[in-house]
Every structure is written in structure tokens, then in C-alpha cells.
Picture 1 (tube, rainbow, N blue to C red):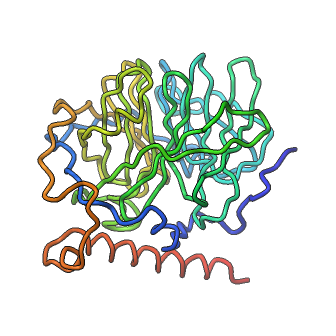
Picture 2 (picture 1 turned 90 degrees about the horizontal axis):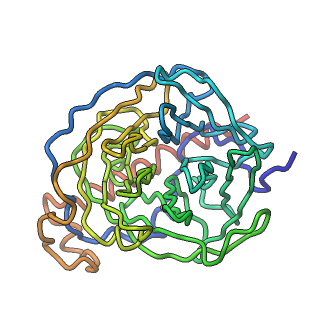
Picture 3 (picture 1 turned 45 degrees about the vertical axis):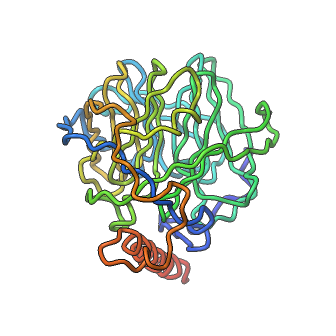
Length: 348
């Protein structure tokens, strides 16, 4: 059975968020707040109770079914769920993944598993596993141009181009795409093509306090190609999409949807008709929640109080009431807690 050379040891979902990895993307710039939206009314579709999905990290709605992945396992496995969240099918590949984090569907119904998690920022490569309707599977390896990153979000454009979005403690996530056609069993370099900045929103949820409002944990593209979305532990951000221009879409201001509080929300999808969002969390039972798409058009955000590219000054970092120190201290606190937890888990 093929294995990933860099498979982690003692992972245990400790969220070992090393500060050096968090700082790799730099401080989040002062950017326009996402367009405020009236609170969406959530509807619980069903509740996941299957032990095989105790760490549900990726979800995509396909017709009447949902596809889901668990964060872990000794083989790539995609679980098909019915309308009652019961597992009715399992599709997989005999590959031992490193840290699968997100799920997408590409042209022709191919299912993409983003094996891109890297809590310690130590992987030489990340991987995309593609499962096709005829049962064939491919393994594509990718490298970053600027060192290792932890990434939990995948966007598969309508033309089949994959985009990997990093998870940054300080809210400035990098977006990467391959520089050449993917090669089955080979390694292709990626290039950084965009940056997504999020700020503190005050929405509760997640395992790391306020820092969770800044960490991108999942991504989705609507089946009709009309929109794309990224989520943090607490909020979803939605952009209109034209063709397969993901970079152009992310350059606009998104509309924001505050998500229902959950212990570790990482999964996001659009509904089958592309008119709503579907989200879920790790932990059992896990409610699969449907929310309507925001009606506030993207691009109507309030003006920024500083240039988008401005680096925060010492005065801004220490200014009373500024969200930046809160984000920094929240990130530091989360880093220390998870680092100590990982040290304890490693003890014999």
C-alpha cells in the first residue's frame, strides 16, 4: 500500500499551531470589513453520528447526497451520506494520507480530497487525491514556493484548477495554485496568486477563542459556478464567481455570514441548487446546518480606515480598542495552549 512519506506521529488533532508558521503569512493588513449581513436563519438538515466521521473536516453536497471526509485514517475514504446523515456508500483509494482537510468536486464528477494539513509546518509536499466515477484514483503532489504551510481549504474551480488556501492565526491567508498541469504520482510547484484577509467579527465558536475568527478552515465552489466561499471557525465569506476566475473573485469584498456556534467547524459546501450554504463541525453528534446565501451583494463593504497594504504601526498595535492586539494575544494564547497539549501527548 502506498504511503505518504511525511505521515505525522502523535497528531491527535492537538492543533499544534506554532507561532513561526502563523507568522509566515505576515500580519493581517487593515482591510475593509466584509459586508454585514442580517443574521441568517439556520436549519438543521440532519445530524452525523457515525464514528467514522468523528473528525468531519470536509463536506460537499452532490444532488440528494452529501460527501464527507474524516480528518485522519489509514486510507483515503470519502463517505456518501443520505438525507438523514447516514453513511450509505464509501469511496476510497489505497493511500495512507498525511492530514486530509477538505473536499471538492471537479469537472465530470471527480472528487478531490485536499491532503494539505500541516499543523507543524514541516511537510516537504502536500497532496491532492482525486477519485473518479469509474473507480480510478490519482495522487498529485504539490510544493509551496515559500516553505511549508498549514492549509485546510480547497477551492476547485469550474475548469478543474485547484486552489489551496492556508490557515493563518493572524488572519492573512495565502492562496496557491499549481504552475503546471498536475502529474499523477509526480510533484508540481505552486505559486501564490492571492491573499485573503479576515478580521475579528465577534462571532462565537471554535476551539481557540477569538483567534478562531481569523483562521480559514474550509472552502467550497457552487455547483453552478456562480459563487465560492471560505469559512473560519465562526463565519463564512461568499464571493460571486465569473467563469473560473477565482483570483479575480477573491479581489472583491465578500459578503459575510455569521455561522451557528460549533465546537470545531471546518466543513462548508453550497446546497445542490447553489442557493444556500451547508456547514458542519467535528465532534459527534454533528449537526449539518443549512443557511441561505447572503442577500447583501459583495463589494458593498464599508471603506477601510487605512490602505489595504498598510502594515500596522506600533501605535495601531497598542491602540486601545484595536482588534489587532486582541487577535495577536488570542493567537499567542492558542499557540501556547496547543503546544503544551502536544508536548503532554508525546510523553510516554
